[in-house]
Length: 50
Image 1 (cartoon, rainbow, N blue to C red):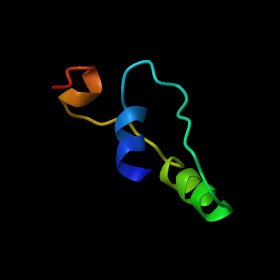
Image 2: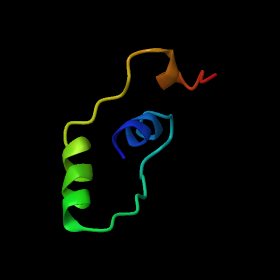
Image 3: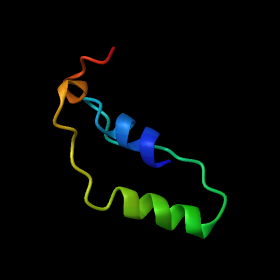
Image 4: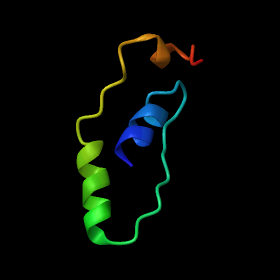
């Protein structure tokens, strides 16, 4: 879920992302991905998505 999760997580107003996981390794990967999550610095984070 790395790419799409980071994109969705950077959208204004998003507080929760639901992600289907089939096993514990996928859950651990998702937790690691968002452990130190920071918003994107470019125009996509302002909601100006094209």
